[in-house]
Image (cartoon, rainbow, N blue to C red; front, side, top):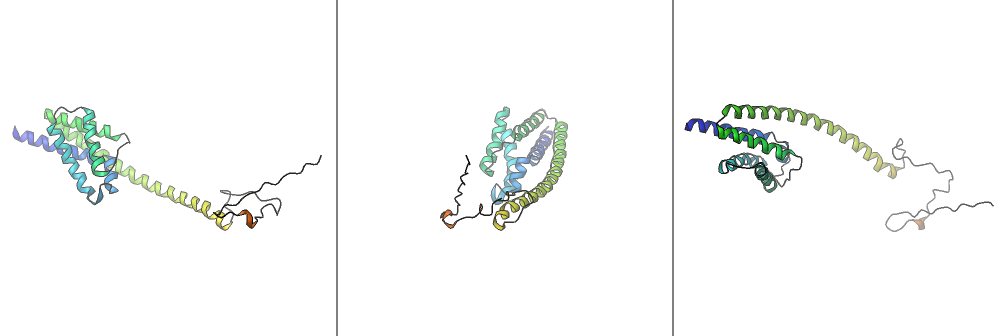
Length: 196
């Protein structure tokens, strides 16, 4: 009987690790080093801490399960999870713990396997999205360059920031006294003469 309990605990540990490794919010915090230089070690420690939390507290409610990993991410990674994934991960963890309590190793194995398979899909999607994001950023940079450089060099920008052509050559003449100290230019409105 002790061997079966050890096997179930090992399966629960594997399930907890699978759920945390597949959690996009945790992946992002680790990849970006939000936990400092030891982000990888903290992520591994987090799995053990969550497992121990369940072992010490057999009758946890879902909100208590949510609070614990949320607090750990806040304290260890300076991250507040607001993407709605915390309740999902907490529900997975709680379901796995119920399987563990019942000694249902097959359900634990199956659940961990499903989570791991989903993780692979999320990773593949994230890579594709990252490439698309890089392409989008290049487009934005070029537009920003056009917007920034057009006023400085006076060149046309193919309609992005085009200015109307003045009809009167003297209309765009800027007098030196119209430029104020901080670089702004005072624009005076011409008065219209009405024949009457």
